[in-house]
Structures are given as C-alpha cells and as structure tokens.
Length: 465
Image (cartoon, rainbow, N blue to C red; front, top):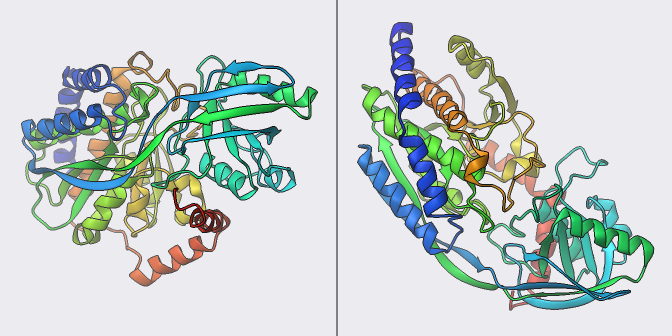
C-alpha cells in the first residue's frame, strides 16, 4: 500500500463523511422514530429492517439477517413502599431480567457493594440496597450483575440498585447475561437512594415492600450483516449493537456508534477500490441482555472467525468524549501505534493481552471475538467512565450528541479498517486453540465465575426461574 494511495483515500473519505447529511438523518430516524429498540419490541424489529435496507441501499454484498433465540424479558409495573418507621410510596422501575415477585423486608445498606459487605451483612430474607459506583476498596470493576449475584448468595429477598448522578433518575442494566433473575431487582434515583440510606442510619429496622410484575419468555432477534468484498478469504469486522434500554432513545449508547458504523458502510464501497480483505459489518441484536447477538454470530461463523484479522467495536464511540483505542487479545499495540503515527492521529492506545481476567472486558460485543483469539479494538473514551452522566438513563437522548463527534469516530474507524484490510501480511499471531482453552480455563477458576456457578446451583432449586 503506497502512502500516496493512503493519503488519497483519507482525503476523499473525509469529504464524504464530513459533508454528507446522511449520518445525522439515520441518527434521528433510529432515535426519534424508533425509540429505544429494546429487545423484543416492535421498534427493535423495525430497526433491524431499516438497517438491512440501508446496507442494501449502500451497495454491500451478502446482505442478510441472521435469526437467533434468547431469553427475553418484558417490563411490568413495579412498586416500592416504605412500611416502617413511616409509610411512603417511592418511584422505582424493575431492572431488566428481574422476575415477578413480592418481598417485604428490612433495608440493608451495602454502600457501593464491596464483596466483604455481603459477607458481613444480615441479608437473609431482607432487601439489599447497593449503589452504582465502584467500591473504593477494589481495583477491579464490580459489575452490577456481580453485586446482584452476591446478594442472592447472601440470602437477600430483593435488590435495590441506586443511580449515581443527581437529576437523571434510575440507571438501568441487565441483572443477568441471557439468564433471568432469581429475586426481584429494582432501580431508583440517586435522590431516593439517599433517602433510603438516611432512613436506615436513623432506624435500624427500616422496612420496605417491593413488588414486580415483569414477564419472561423465549424470543427471537436478528444480526444484520453485509460485506464490502475483498480479494482474499481474510476479513475485518466492524460491529455495533442496535438495541437499547427501554428508558430512552439510547442516543449515546448505542446509536452514536451504530450510525458511525452505518456511515462507514455507506462510504467504503464507493472508495475502497480493490480490498485485500473483506470488510464485514455486523449490527448485533440484544447486546444489553448479555451480548447475545455477538455470541450467536461467533458461534455460527467458525470459519469466518478463523479468518478474521480484527474486530472493531464502535459502541458509544460517537459521544462527546476523547477517542482512544483499547486493544484486546493478541498484542496489536505496536502495530496501531505505528499506524496512528502514520495517520497523524495522536491517540491513547492501550492493550489488554489477558482480557478474561477482569469482568469489565466481558460486557461489550467484542468479547465473544477476543475469547476466540480474534484481536479486538474498542474505540472509546480512554477513561471509559461508567459514571458518565446519561449512561443507561432516561436522559440518553438525541440532544446530548453532536454530529461532529459521530463523524470523527466514523472517519477514524474507516481509516484504521482500510489499512488493516489492505495489509499484504497481517503481522499478528493468533493464539492456538490450546492457548485459548487455557485462557478460558483460568478465567473459569476466577471468583466472578464461581459466584455465577453458585447462583446456577440455586436456580435448579427454583425451577420456575
């Protein structure tokens, strides 16, 4: 690949992305017309059809939808009432994958949900109150599902998840990755959470009643796939999920990254000439309930996975924050630092070569790829703060996002993908199947997985779950 060819591609690419109104039009249609696109809703199905139609319109080949099944969930009404030492009804919402149920118990304030807090608390039959911040005592990220599972194992009858930002209401998120919960789980705003915490400090026997009426059923979703064909069997994957949570439009998460991927799909067939590798676009369904679409794709495409050079994940990349490259799996740090220097891009580039050690790395669509040894690149804010203001809240709406940020993410990813796809020789060694199996075995011995296994033992005692 000559430097002249590379420069010409970048110049034409910039003109296409930064001057076209198509990206923002797609963004408004997906957010304003189709809303949250939560898994199992008519809006999700409408979005899948829209995306498939756009890939066909943009001239991609092999455009199709791949169907898969999953454990679905539908929101019902939820109720939270303080019953002692006073009587008061409080606003709340069920958390995705919460089962229906009614629980009356004492509030047990576990703060940020450090592991030792669950061991030291009298949770049997009571209600765990946990915030959405990470415990200061922990270097690793303690995800909400781990806090929920620890509450179950400690005997809690219900779980209250407290938002972390003033004025934005509850922060949502699934309680199980493709698994229905065992105890009712609800979310409340930071303000209501602080009220409950004050109540428990003044009254050791403060009690609440929680009732959830959600329903659970097997459902169907789709991955939307399209290719810009190359001359070899090798492949570069650009992916993003299209489902959001049902509180809002999901403008930052996931739609900002989704329309960035769609924009690359629009311009690349016009500009690529003859690619060495195929660039495949995979728009995943049902990420928010456990990366279900991404797992379905990886499981059903073993040959393509073996030939995939890298997977680029654009999820939330178009929000108003600095972009960096977080690399996973086989070490590609030196390669991308050289590429960024060549592109005159001053980017934060970091590498996690053992991504299965920490659950933080397992909660986005690149995980099923990296678990099979595929190098993966997550375009994201280097700080990756999970306390960002509107994350998973009712306020994640179109007005929080700028077209320029999405266009910059699309431009950067397109430049990177084009270079990887046109390398005569990909200078990255994939791990062997034995090495992948060893990595997975080490992860399976970890504390988080052992907690999940213990919860599954309890599940067998509750067949209705």
